[in-house]
Length: 246
Ligand code: PEP
Picture: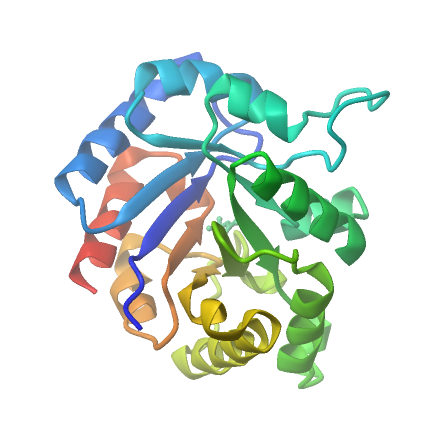
């Protein structure tokens, strides 16, 4: 099955209003590469301004609360993200699974809430270095995926992000990426039947313009989730162009 590639940036806790000019340049490059879906997940407080700056470009959030509303100080609901103009949200990023101790159950509830509100959802999974070194990466990440999946696969994408590759400059071998993405595809088909073939599986972890071609050539790699290299248009645009080539 052919799946359109998706290149999504994750600004994490970076970015002020002045940095929106980077998104303007990225949106212009995305428009020149219409065969690729491109999105940028910015800090929640920047979403509305980013949407105003680039109304035709997909702006997303980095997290969403699972509840519709209520006594959850500091949190943001899916309806609030939609109201601000977001089209997608990341859930289950390892920095939240670790830093905010988010469980698989919570990640599944967040994904369910995002999809129910009409957002596209990028659900992150990935193993730690000790798990990789113990040879348990595929089994661990497959189990994490099974436990985090929402009931509905429409508008869902998965991001495989080995924790040890995030922001480190280290990247798994193409064989290791292929083995993981193939295992995740099998789990998606087991969960959703034929619809599991349509779910995009992104790779994330130190993707740059210099390694993107090689990564996008791997079977079942349907795009990338990009942290550090998404902050500047000059770094991100070559990744969009690599996705358009491959
Ligand atoms: C991320 O945080 O999702 C990520 C992939 O970061 P980086 O590209 O900086 O490794």
